[in-house]
Structures are given as C-alpha cells and as structure tokens.
Amino acid sequence: MNDEMMERPQQRASAAFSSHAPSAAHRFDALRRKDEILAMVAHELRGPLTPMQLAIHLIRRASADRPEVLRSIDMLDRQITQISRLAEDLMDATRIDRGAYCV
Image (cartoon, rainbow, N blue to C red; front, top):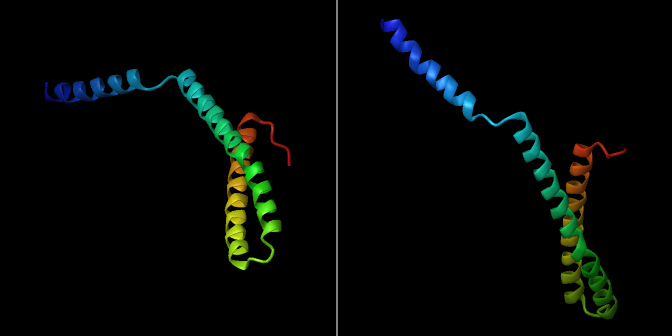
C-alpha cells in the first residue's frame, strides 16, 4: 500500500507535465515568430543608419578645421558601424535559420 501511494503522486506529476508541455507544432511556430521578429528588428535597425552615415560624412567635410567636432564625428561613426555590424549579424542569423545563408 505504501509503495502504491508513493507512485501515484509521481505518475500524476508526470502526466501533468506531459499534458502542459508545448507541442512540436507550437515550438516550431514560436521559433518561426522569433526569426520573423529578429529579421524585422535587423531591417528596422539598418533603415536609419544610411542617412546617419551620410550626415556624418557631410558634417566631417564641413568641419575639417574643427578637431573637437571631428573627434565627436569619429566616435559617432564608430558606433554606427558597430550597430550596422549587429544588424548584419541578426540578418545572417535569420538567413542561417531559413537555410538561405551562403558563404
């Protein structure tokens, strides 16, 4: 009787866990949505970077005689380059997941 009483809670816990576990279709759908979000974020990050890079280029040309401005522009340029790399990495990750990445 004691062994039987001990087995029942374990069986109930196991049954409860398996009934609440996400299905394979649910997991696949969640992964697909995650990939779509990552692709959207990467695309949205890339959008404003091009005009920012153009503005940096124009300010640099107009401020050639102002070293303090050029230092700030250089810092901004480095940060924008880093954000561009991160956006590209996100795009590469979504391409890999879709099987569309070619080396």
